[in-house]
Length: 176
Image (cartoon, rainbow, N blue to C red):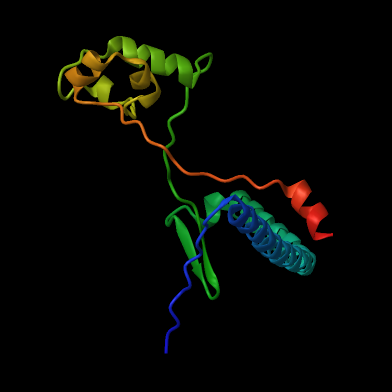
């Protein structure tokens, strides 16, 4: 059987002050539990780091040794095939391509050159080489007059949003 929640009713300023005190007490309970959780997680992380440090270092050394072995024997082992199947895995080399700036060029200068070459036509390969994320700047729109907002289909809606702030120091003193 489910219990129906009791609604919390605030009838006057004294009740509102008591409600704020209860919120502060709830927050202290939640914060204390979160602190315990974080301490436990930190201890577990430290333990895992300690236990796995040596195996991870050994794995890194083995990976480096395999890479050195494959690189020094590349002409012999990988002349015909790009990989070698072994009992416990595969060694090999993969071809890949990466775009990099030419000497004395930066990605910023490349972007500026591409922008200068964009024609604006559909299918322009230069235009396709630049990623743009366009979105409405609402902060600018807040400053616009109402007529301009109407022109673009926007409006400003005023609203009152409830908030509360806890006075942690005073509540701690009252709880003590």
